[in-house]
Amino acid sequence: MPELLSDHTTIRLGGPAERFEIAGTTEELLDLVKSADAASEPVLVMGGGSNLVIGDVGFSGLTVKVASSGLRIDGTRVTVDAGVEWDEVVQATLAAGLAGLESLSGIPGSTGGTPIQNVGAYGTLTSDVLVELTLYDRHTGQLETWGAQRCAFGPHRQSIFKRSERYLVLDVTFELAASEISRPIRYADLAAQLGVEKGSAAPVREVRDAVLGLRAGRGMLLDGDDHDTWGVGSFFLNPVVKTVPPAAAACPQFPDVNGTKLSAGWLVDHAGFPRGYGADLGRGTVALSTKHALAITNRGGATTAEVMKFAAHIREGVEAAFGIRLEPECDLVNCAF
Image (cartoon, rainbow, N blue to C red):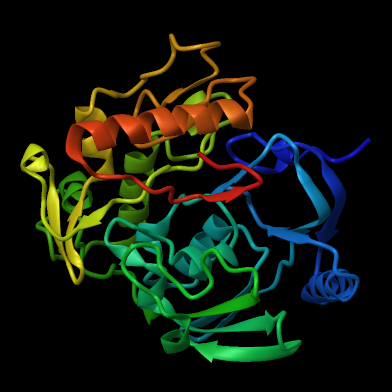
């Protein structure tokens, strides 16, 4: 029986893989990808599947799941293979007396995805702590080590790797601090959860606990029994506009080098799509999370086609209300809306 890709994504969607392999080491990953490229076989590389929506048709070619497991701590420098589950990295660094990743606790997915998405949460971005990575360039056939400056990181989950199949991230190195005290808390909700002033610091383990509490309250900690977590986190990017439309004047706004960043969750909610919206539409298999208006969730038995139709419905409603067109934050494979 072909492997169903819905078993490997957090939104539990995706048809069959024509060929499915698990790469337990970096060497296995390279061998699989190089062989497929030499044969002109399409390749889908996936980690934890937490930012991925795959079409009902599945994927024709090789799907390789990265499961490499190396994690090395040398002083304040931490090098991690692409396949290591991200929260295992956070826990290992805290256990080693290192600070810097505590605000990124509880994020699903694997380490190889962190530079691709420039993963960030609660005031910390991957690019704040990443110093270098090892990659394979599928165009040139070369293994390379890049410093952070080559990765073209940006504030909106931007990197040179996003939406590109050229580069295969093999491992990532972070520079952290030998400290039991966190970086300054830059996110207001996290500061409030901790009971400290924004800009102050706190013990790293208290920060982790607070972050996990906030994520749980928004349905952002994976739980197989909670359909609010059957998604990809925030489905849409926070839009950046040159001029804020009058209709969106009350929307939370943040300065950006390209204009003003707006809260996509606020736009969705105030366009008439509150938390839980969609439960009474169609078969009731797709709806917004009951905890977070920006998360589109599989309520059980959904198809990718249904999720795409629902996402289009939300985007059209926001555009009609505010004149702002939302774009997906997640990666779409063999599907679109």
